[in-house]
Image 1 (cartoon, each protein chain N blue to C red):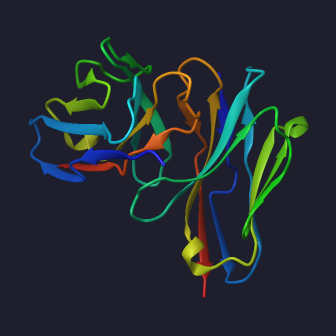
Image 2: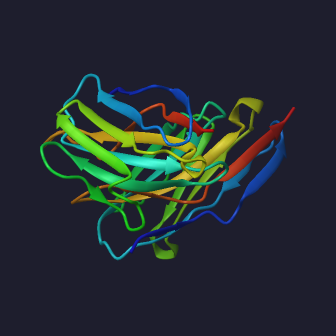
Image 3: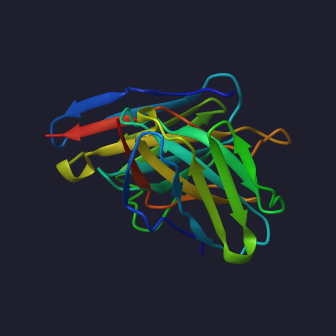
Length: 115
Length: 118
């Protein structure tokens, strides 16, 4: 069975602060995909990143960066110089690389960026 | 990127009525679509996997007779909530994957349907 844990229920920061959202996962699959999605108040899921289990390189995209550590089964997400528009719920998710490929979501972290 | 639409975006109905939600892949063919449900301030939970031309696969605890899924074509899956009750009020989101070798392993999510049952 797969499981994704986002221990931080809610985080509040002041604009321009850096913030890291934690994600720990469990799976028996040797190959899998990890994702991060942003869900603003409108409800629509916004895709941020997909990471293959074979690719442990960290990735940076603008103010966003991701740290994938297979040894600790973690896939953490950092926002640098946060902005009010970053306020949303962020979900980490895991899927099989074969078969059904449905996503298992973490419980989400609500990020509030105060001006 | 691929686009998935859902209709309606919002629906309010009386208890006991049935509601149909459509999920369409607009620019690609989807052999598999997934239906998720999200209660307020909770995570998304997979309800069922919809396969074109075959019966849907339901997750444990999801009543297949209450949540009818039809995947009649490669671009359309429908979820019908039969005899809806207030506890069915939720945000329903579909996602779709493409057919065959070009599957990117990035599911494309629809914008969601907010169902309120009075």
